Image 1 (cartoon, rainbow, N blue to C red):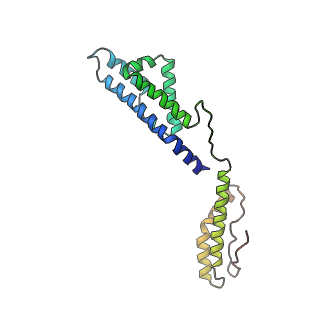
Image 2: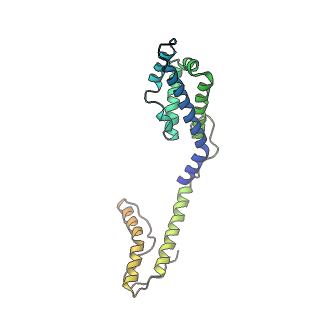
Image 3: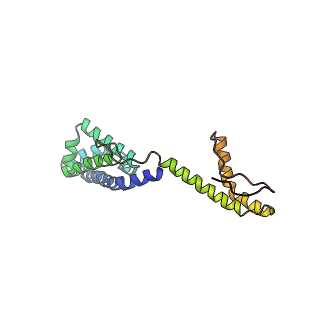
Length: 201
């Protein structure tokens, strides 16, 4: 399920996240450029600096957070701009097209991560994780049986090689038992003199 979520996320989200980063960075850069004017050419410089202080006190590092956190921070800033009646001013200083790009880019990222207004039609499988774990368990069991089939039960060195090979499996099972998780053993340990005949599935 995790691999499926990663695939789903990268295929759908990456282009929207890249656009989101570019648009917010561009808006920030435009305001920084205007702020550099200071008071030499009217009050644009002062107004731009006030907007930077209000909405970008730490720059646009938020845009490079994971997609969910980045969208949240971007949308939070847009909501504040609306509540504080600053959108028109930002559009006047940075350009209406730039402001539109930021708004649409943020909305598109929200849709891509499933927090927008459009219902998501593709969702990861709810049973994919269980299926993957079952497949892994079968593969580990087959691996252990293959090792056991090669053990010479009259050769202590052969038995010791087997024990070393399956030691990580035993350690994992012991850890799970300590955590209170009861699992069927993948393969019984082989004691000297015991038959390494593979167990049936």
